Length: 280
Image 1: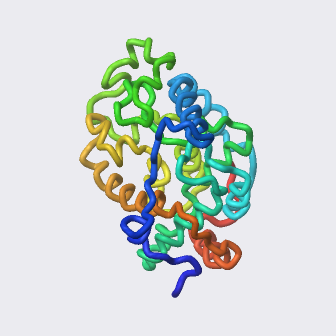
Image 2 (image 1 turned 180 degrees about the vertical axis):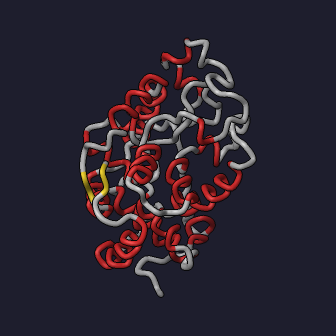
């Protein structure tokens, strides 16, 4: 079936006018200043105690009851303040990602739906959570940050955990090769929506759940960091996350999908894997 929005990924990657993504520069522009401010706040305030508090607050799942489409519509109100690549509402990025996956993986409806819903956790921002606790690259709290993290380890200068001997080391509170599932990740939309799907008994395959949980863990899947904490079993998660990232990152372009025309197709996928209202 021909999709409503399909242009060649290679044109963005290699073609004339190819775009550079994830340019965390120190240029004196409004977007660059906004992105830097968001990351420095994130790296200051994302501590073990903060993450525990967010789990206690949000994983009661008593804040809203929404269908997937209702949650996606909320993303119309949210522009990611940590993203240097785009200033369009997140719902546009959701359909862009899904349609690029559908073009390359027409036989994997679960993967297409993962593209559509992967950022739904950003509705945290709609409920007045600051963007530094919603968006941006994730990382394990409770150990030293890796040098590959956006804006470097100097951006953690004022993080309280860096003065705690239980956390301020390479392994921190973790054991060697403890595995991805045993890491306490910085709080944000990834972990939140993963937990929402899990709580509501959605039937997406484990690959989809892992992608949603770790797609913003760029230091790991893009830079190869934190391998001292992962296991051989995490390699499959890594490969699926890398495959997904091609569509998540390189769908950010000026080409806009016809969201209204696409909703019927994606509602059928939602009804298969995540029907009805979910508790958020």
